[in-house]
Image 1 (cartoon, rainbow, N blue to C red):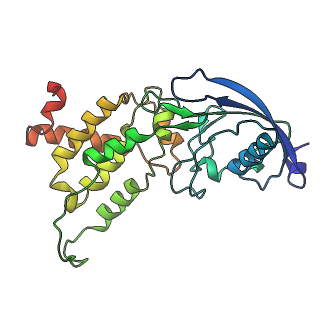
Image 2 (cartoon, rainbow, N blue to C red):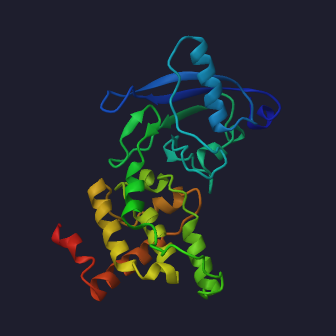
Image 3 (cartoon, one colour):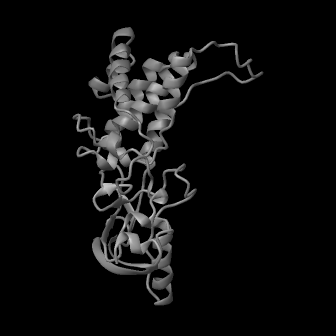
Length: 267
């Protein structure tokens, strides 16, 4: 059946899925058949159909993460045919639809592959390392009390747009999974750039960038070697220019104070 014909019918697909019972367990690929899949199914809905069949057969369903299914939360972290989120531009797995496939296709489905993201079960990984980076500095401190007027701190349109572009990151971890070094530089760069470009974030900027870079090392993330795979895989199109901003902020921190020096001292 051609792709055009499949628009008006159903598809049968061969799935080769990574199965792993738990952390530290031996994983393996298993083969399944997805039947009666329409072009209108989303990728996760297709997995739901397969899981319903497995449950009816008394077998363990395929474990995978999901929540919003609207491309917002970033939980649907899967590598589809070797590419995080399936390779469609600015598309998460939950936004990927089966009309992108043809009847009879073979689809390989794996979890994120990165040292910082240990596999919990099947396609589910622990992305808590990204939370640790945020805990180390992905925020600003603010005094409690009355809320200031919105126009009390003037911000230029250029700075506001730049910060919002960085803030689009949803923390899915595709950049880490795509990077051959398992680096979190794009994620960290986006968070650092988002705050450093605004007046409210500049007070803690030196400490923030130093602490977040040290946390990257402690969590087992690699370093950037300019492959640009992170930007290509990002479902929100986060630009690698934010990695450059991360590096500049770190150098500024070293010159302005000793806030970043403990990273090199190994403290």
